[in-house]
Length: 305
Ligand SMILES: O=C1NC(=O)NC(C(=O)O)N1
Image (tube, rainbow, N blue to C red):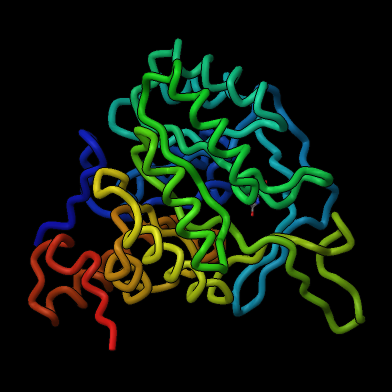
């Protein structure tokens, strides 16, 4: 049974990796994933300088998923870049910044480095007070990508927020199809949700309790975003599916919708890196039952009525 995935010239043993932000803040955490059954990892989204992030409590989970307002705490681009430059194999480096000028600065730094993996440009963090999610501003996103591809020579994809309007999928896909983007990762957390505890109180401190939703809560939205972009993007822009993955069946559904790699966030936070072996075995069981020997045989084969 062949679980291999190819994105551009990069080949992965299987479709599984972590979602940015989970179990990927320190080198130790990244090494744990690298030594697990995951086929790759993505770093915590990093910025030019280290960031403390938002006040705590800033993460909460329950049986249906998680809510977070971390605020992009990270150890800075040099920490992750130096580590990644020392590795063989193909890994993802997630980056963002607080304005487009600094996004160019961080990408220029990567451009000049010997990093040979894929950059995941995070255009969708919902948790920076006063900062809108970049990818909800179509004009800014279009201009940013046009400027990036004037100088950026390595392999880059974008991490998108969920969209909820078919017209927005059309607009965004038309923008993305203009550029040599290697992948689109859908979705980031569903921004600005609230969870309330039994004391009539929100469960996280930042932004009056408004935070990004993850886990089972968001799987239907994640699958729809994966399939909407799969239907609209040039075939050389691969989709990475993120959101609501707890089982092999969830991975199967993301791939059915068109995903190549599939990222695991909230479930990894709960179960730690042994989750990759469990979910990989569950996926293999499903493929055996359905007599599939490779992911290509069912990717994008979602049926409609
Ligand atoms: O892009 C992000 N998505 C999230 O849900 N949280 C993190 C964060 O707040 O750092 N960033």
